[in-house]
Amino acid sequence: MSIDKDTVVRIARLSRIAMEDDALEPMAEELNGILAWVEQLSEVDTEGVEPMTGAIAATLPQRDDDAEAGTATDDLLANAPEADDGFFVVPKVVE
Amino acid sequence: MSDLTALTIADARAGLAAREFSARELTDAHIAAVECARDLNAFVAETFDAARAAADDADARLAAGEGRLLEGIPLAVKDLFCTRGVRSQACSNILDGFAPPYESTVTANLWAVGALMLGKTNMDEFAMGSANVTSADGPVINPWRRRGEDKPLVPGGSSGGSAAAVAAGLCLGATGTDTGGSIRQPGAFCGIVGMKPTYGRCSRWGMIAFASSLDQAGPLTRTVEDAALMLQAMAGHDSKDSTSIDRPVPDYAASLTGDVRDLTIGVPAEYRMEGMPAEIEALWAEGVRWFRDAGATVVDISLPLTKYALPTYYIVAPAEASSNLARYDGVRYGLRVEGNDPTEMYARTRAAGFGREVRRRILIGTYVLSAGYYDAYYLKAQKVRTLIARDFESAFETVDAVLTPTAPFAAFAIGEKMDDPIAMYLNDVFTVPASLAGLPAISVPAGLTGDGLPLGLHLIARPFDEPTLFRAAGLLESAAGFSHRPDQSGAGRAV
Image (cartoon, rainbow over all chains, first blue to last red; front, side):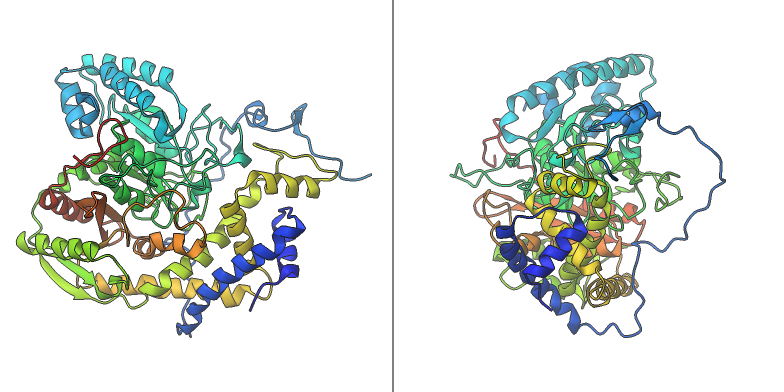
């Protein structure tokens, strides 16, 4: 499996990372280098092996559904690039 | 280094308790050291006023005989930890100006026992790197030089600023985070102790996420005992991190008995890597002798999947990163580059805010998780990860700890290994397997290369068996008798 320019365009779009046209080909090459290297995993027989999803086997803890004091709205909005009247501001979504 | 900056945490505690010096004097000595060593670029934020105020509080407590575990001990904090009101940017432009309104659990735990913060340390952007060269704040310079050379060397990474700061005597200890070796490898490159606890031992709450199934906080210190003291404070259950484990934190320093006669140490054949420098092979063999001389049993073991750990890691970690870093959208914090609609704003913000290595990992992570490739890459890697963890489980049926080198080479020059991402990834070939398996591991400075650079030996133990890990590391430390330090100007040679 190898990544071409169109694939880079597709994954850059999925990743929401803008890319200049002349950066696509070099990135495809870099990604192909990494993929060719990880390809060696196909040598490992994983028939019937369960995938490991966490580092330590532990059941997810449960807690009571009690309300706790969260972070104050003003504190959270203080880091926003643009905020107004208790809201985050984004570019216009609908015309 | 003044006398006060040459102390271990254990010595400083004793000196403070005996009122030989004050916390304020100790803190001022370190502030002066940081100011003299700014050319190392180890710190990205200095919080001296808060440090002095905390030192005065510590002195009041000490005078009242109420000193706590780390009362008055000046530490540095990796920029990956959220610290209330102080920049916390994981050294990325995308978090430009971010000062969180909350404190990470690990740092809060440290302040709760009296430690104080001198500042935030430089790191690879989002902890993605092994040389501290991907930082948006510029590279860190290792206080060590090759003998007779002035070429600046990397401190390792990603916790490069923390490691350089501890090695240069700018703080008594520092927090780091380790996803694939980011505490242990810089520890080895800078001639200090770097320790990664069992996954789940320290809370990840308030740590800026890279790969959540791998990320763990840990200490960087100049001695094993200091690492034990710092971990004592950092570790513990936290209901705000669902992967934090609820079990008691033992007295780690008490495990340093020096007696390893009951221990069996395993030496894995698969870590004998082709092309590894002979002096690293020799140091490893010396480590084996030290354990034998101390009465431990040393046996050869096999960890057959070792060579697949690095490629597994470079699927799993970018996959998790691509998901974790989706939160940086220019809306809630950090950088925003305007666009005509939200999607364009996101894409422009992320292109401008993320550095090259981070973009590369997000793209590869997105690819291996995308429809049609998920099974071939991500699922396959997760299955190989299971087998790597099983390798260790079988080994730990017969051994108590595994001994390996920490890294396949010593510190290299800034600019080297940067053309080929895979050459850089090889830094972590010996540290990644324990990360994938979630095991506690430690790097102990154990020797010098022919040209005077520090080398580390690496121990891995069973889950939550940090006491055995510290005990074995203590033996390595005393047998190696590593007392070399970079010189006080920070431009130095081994002395």
